[in-house]
Length: 288
Image 1 (cartoon, helix red, strand yellow):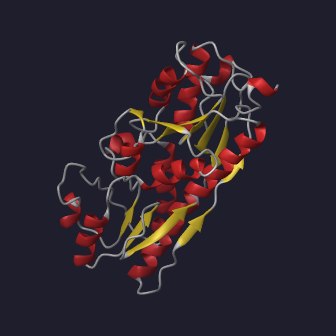
Image 2 (cartoon, one colour; image 1 turned 60 degrees about the vertical axis):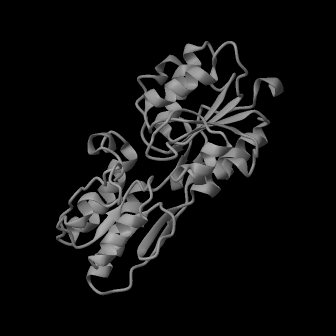
């Protein structure tokens, strides 16, 4: 993982993915060791150099992982990478981040939205906040973040993007405060790159006196169970979101790792997200 472990376990996506890994590994009698790859390590490998392990599943690959993979290959340790760039020596477990985001954007376009903003996950280990200009986009290395943004821009080529420092309700709220400031132009729809970010954006919209979805539509990504303590102020009960199969991703990763340990051919895997329409999207105000 490229996060602090305490932060990683606050994100339901990581927890559910680890559930899938643990289910398959546990059934095979294997134990799990959680290791955070330090972001300030110049070689990008950190404890992977000498940690006791037989196989590695890389989760949350939002930094360059090829140095780490190189270390593991020298140790002849099998590697599985969940949602990462293709790297020689790592078995991929992929999600349709780009195509799923394109489908969400197309759905908003069909509703009549023309002014759509993307609130992104971090683009790199720096975890900055603020607008994503061309230079920032070009320097980004977070695979999932970039793929989801590329998918939206296949439908909205000039879509504004705002980066957060992580997947949390507070990060989404901070981004939303800037988006819905009274003295600036406001998007009619926001595509958030996680459900937690989406909930924060909705909170900021409500605080700004906006209605969801009458004044602004919000789409998330993940399909997690969202605490309704925020949404009780509205008729909203379900986010419009892209539901991804977290547990199945983890299971596939664990099966690939175990296959390599047994000398069998590991099977790469690819999963598809499903657009689930909830209460947070509708036509823009101009076409109601």
